[in-house]
Image 1 (cartoon, rainbow, N blue to C red):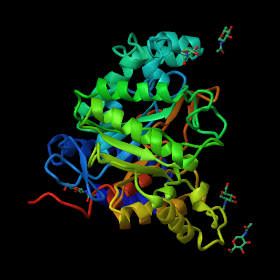
Image 2: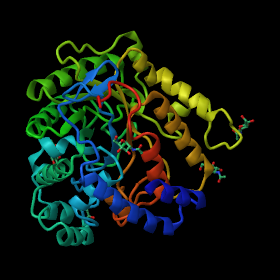
Image 3: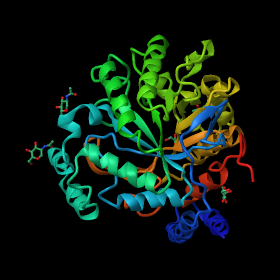
Image 4: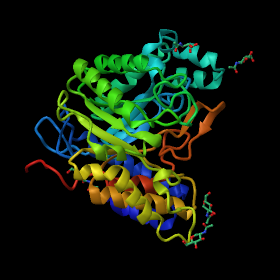
Length: 419
Ligand SMILES: *[C@@H]1O[C@H](CO)[C@@H](O)[C@H](O)[C@H]1NC(C)=O
Ligand SMILES: *[C@@H]1O[C@H](CO)[C@@H](O)[C@H](O)[C@H]1NC(C)=O
Ligand SMILES: *[C@@H]1O[C@H](CO)[C@@H](O)[C@H](O)[C@H]1NC(C)=O
Ligand SMILES: *[C@@H]1O[C@H](CO)[C@@H](O)[C@H](O)[C@H]1NC(C)=O
Ligand SMILES: *[C@@H]1O[C@H](CO)[C@@H](O)[C@H](O)[C@H]1NC(C)=O
C-alpha cells in the first residue's frame, strides 16, 4: 500500500507539499511495521567476505545509510534544537535505512577544553542563543551534558532503534568540510596532526567497544590538498587500522582515498596489507554531480548525453575496480539538491542509483540534516541536500526517499540468509 501512495505521489511532482502529508502517514505505518519485527535487525559484529560485508553468521549485510553531521563548531549532531534525538532516529529507521554515518571532529575526542564543554557553553561561545534555548526545551536531558556525552547519548539512541552506526572522522578542527587549503586536508596540514588523529581514533574505538551496533569507523573523510600522496596514505591508514583493531577487534575499518575521497586508483598497484586485521577492511568513496568523477562529461549540460556513462566509467576506473579484486566498497557520500527542479539533479541521482543497483553496492546518502545550528557563520542554515526539512519532522522530497527505499535499500546479491 505504501508503494501505491508513493507512486501517485511521484507522478505529480517532486516538491508538492501535499505529498509530505501522505508520506508522513505512510511513515507512521512503516514505523509500525519496523517495530513489529518485520524488518531484520543486524547481527553484529560485521566482517568482510570477499567484496561483501557479512554479519556474525556470514550473511550479507547491506549498509544502507544516511549521513548525519556532528562535526561542526557547536560540536554535537545537528537538529537537536528541532526534534528529539529519538524522534530523528525513528524517522531514519522508519524509512528503511539500517545505518547512520555520524560525523565528528578529532578535537571532540582529544581536546578536553573543547569536547568537555557543555552544550550551553559551546552554544554560548558561538552566540547561537535561540538554538540553545530550543535545544534545552526539546532535548532537556541532553542539554546539561558535555559535547562528548551528547555524542554518546545520540549513538545509544540510534542503536536502541536497531540502527547500525558508522563513526566518521570528518575533520580535525571542527568546521565545515572540505576545502583543499582548510588545514584539515592531509597529515601535516595546520590542524591535521597524525599523532592526535591516531589518539582520537583509538579513543573512539575503545569508548564504543561495548556497543556492538557501532559497527564501523571511517578513518578519515576526503583526504585532499597539496600534501596528499599514496605513500603516506599506505603507512598511516595501515597504522591507524592496526591501532583501532588492537583496541576494538570487532569494528569494521573504512578507508577512503585521495582527491576528496574520489580516488582509490593507486590501489591498482596493490591493496592495503590487511593480514593483521583480516576481513575487517572496507574502502569508501564519494560521488557528486560536479566532482572529479564527472570529468569528461557535464551533468549540467542538458545536451551532454554521455555525462552518466562517462562518470560511471570514471567511478569504475578510480574506485569500482576494487570490487573485481574482491574488496568491499562503500559509496559513503552522494546527494543532490532536493529542492531543485533542475533536471540535472535527477539525472545525476538516476545515474548513481543505476550504478549502485547493478553493483549492489553499500551506500550512505548525503545527508539527513535539514539545517545546521551554525554553518559558515550562518545561523540556522537550511540544507537543500538534507532529506529532512528544516523542521526535522518531515521529508523535503518524499519522492527521493521512496526511490532510495525501493531501488537500493535491499540487497540482491552476496551470501543471503537461508529461509
Ligand atoms: C582545543 O580546543 C580549544 C577550544 O576550542 C582551542 O582553543 C584549542 O586551540 C584546541 N587545542 C588543540 C591543541 O587543538
Ligand atoms: C557574540 O556576541 C557578543 C555580544 O554581542 C559579542 O561581543 C561577541 O563578539 C560575539 N561573538 C561571536 C563569536 O560572534
Ligand atoms: C541546471 O543547473 C546548472 C548548474 O547550476 C545550470 O548550469 C543549468 O543551466 C541549469 N539548467 C536548467 C534547465 O535550469
Ligand atoms: C554541451 O554538450 C554538447 C554535446 O556534447 C556540446 O556540443 C556542447 O558544446 C556542450 N556545451 C557546453 C556549454 O559545454
Ligand atoms: C526489503 O526486505 C525486507 C525484508 O526481507 C522486506 O520486508 C521489504 O519489503 C523489502 N523492501 C523492499 C522495498 O523490497
